[in-house]
Length: 165
Image (cartoon, rainbow, N blue to C red):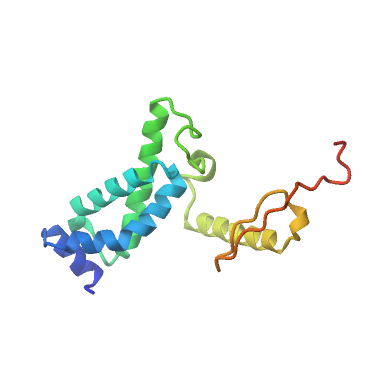
């Protein structure tokens, strides 16, 4: 398997088969990213546009700055955000386009690398704490662990003892 720089040089030179190799390598992570940002109905459009941009700008890839995956996922993120902005301009609500997260509430354009790292560490700590809760503490299904176990879903929502209902 060629290195990232050689593969992207081959893609930039139009070598037959280079796009197939790049697409096979990137399709799955790009689809996961796109689905998370724009939802399942528009994820294929985002993946296609991202792969087209990767192909068109292959000569700009710099292996000294990172991997093909990191570069393409950044492009995919930008494509997905652009897709959301276009949908909003058309008047579609986030729910209409099947968006799973609202980027305006979670993205902080002023955050530096340390802020992002702190936020990621906090998110991991919260996920670990929630996973340690007994099943009766939450009415929400738990996300599967990274090991792939099935989520535990309570049969009925527990009512807090002090609740008037």
